[in-house]
Length: 470
Ligand SMILES: Cc1cc2nc3c(=O)[nH]c(=O)nc-3n(C[C@H](O)[C@H](O)[C@H](O)COP(=O)(O)OP(=O)(O)OC[C@H]3O[C@@H](n4cnc5c(N)ncnc54)[C@H](O)[C@@H]3O)c2cc1C
Image (cartoon, rainbow, N blue to C red; front, side):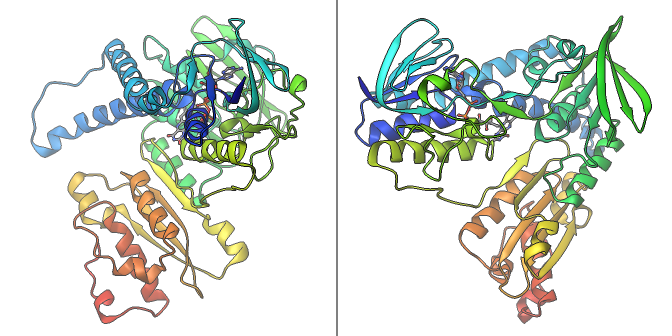
């Protein structure tokens, strides 16, 4: 009998197993597939590698502008996939806490097939191996939500898209959240004709409205057909060239066709076949495992962490969850969420990122000041020929607290990280304006946008008034 058994070796499960072992528990980690979970094998790592290739294609097009003469760039997609596989293997071997797990004394059962509960303390792997444990932590992640309309079996998910052996001539992407936008952007850069369908009124609906608008405009300018509020999907049918999607809006029926249709219309919990009923674990209305503030499920000795709980479905949150769940499982329920500041970003072209509240949300509860600096007016972006985008800061007028930061454009994700550090350190906007950030840099835009708000709030010192605005 183990003290702690962790199911699923994505970021949540690996950190949960490490933390449990560190805290002195005899721990086992059982996972269906490869070590590293979606993060290493099917999500950010392969996506980021493809996005890097897309960026190189784009950079290659800029070479002539800087006087560098080379032949026409062309894509060898098979070679690119070889590179993706190399990167995934390397990350799995050297990152994702592999070496710590190996030296931690955790029993690791990899490629074990689908695990299921036999009773509240016993699980059986797909290969028929049984484990018993006092405490169990479920970290089985999420899965792409499937459509249920006729012909839905003809469509692919993002996982199928990364596995293609050649770039399709055309792709319909359904769903313009983070995953759909990345699929659209990457394959657009690699030469596919993209139609991006979003049922709601704007793409990237959880971003600040100005971010959605700017990314939609940039997507359109790069040749992506963006269809917002397109209506309701009726069905899919096979055609000689690929798949046709039928959809309707206000009684008007329309169709669109492409070589491939990729659906990225949300997530559900990775709990199929897990036998939660045998363990007494209940799910919430959205089908994700219901947890309390200590990440305890309805069965008090069973915890859940990461995407399977359906909250912020990102690697840093999964890591944090894994740590909290394991601490509470071993030491008793006392630890709750560690840090509320959660920067989020996506590697589209242009990139976009956010931390904190959108302007609209902030206005519901605060008296707000905002400022925007456009990327066509900062030195580094002009030097690099990356002038699409902006940085927006949202601040509480009275307290000077930084409430949110929203960036579109080159290195948006990195810029927002800097703001997240400032927010976590409880810096006020005028504190941020006073930091002499390096020149000329992308993050330098933060000093400038902070200085602009500082002046709006009449807090500026003479020095801030003459600040070099970069
Ligand atoms: C295309 C894409 C891009 C993304 N980009 C980013 C990004 O840029 N930044 C970011 O922070 N996040 C990103 N994410 C999200 C990120 O991948 C997830 O939030 C993260 O992987 C969640 O970690 P997890 O440990 O909860 O689950 P997962 O990483 O999904 O791991 C779950 C593990 O459980 C195992 N498992 C499932 N069922 C069973 C079972 N019955 N028995 C045994 N084992 C089982 C699986 O094999 C897997 O190993 C992206 C996701 C996608 C799809």
